[in-house]
Image (cartoon, rainbow, N blue to C red):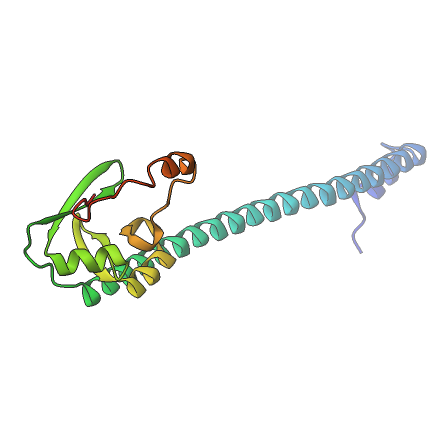
Length: 183
């Protein structure tokens, strides 16, 4: 069997036993230290990898939620478009202007007397589709409002009455209001 370098040096007399023992113990200490540091380095690397994976998963979940939200928004818009296109009423050519607000602008839609009466009684509502105004029955307007309120521009049953001017209303109670006044 071949002798190790240390044993060969001892036989040749170039090293003594005391020096060989100290070198051996020093080597053992260094191996322990390296083993200990190696484990800590592996743990740090593993922790860094796990943290990166968690961050990636969180980012993926966020992106998936955004994509899902966009898909739901598009589906709702498609449902609203279909509801309006299927249920829109024929807009009769008339000479009575029906006024309503679209955002901050006051718009008007010319209708005949029968359609104007249906709008004022709350049977028809005015909705907006692609910068065009359509008339739809009130139950359809309710379904549209459930999905997105911004499409419904005017509904007679949702007109808010001013309750602050009741004292003034009582003062004008004795005067008749003509039927031909329309807003």
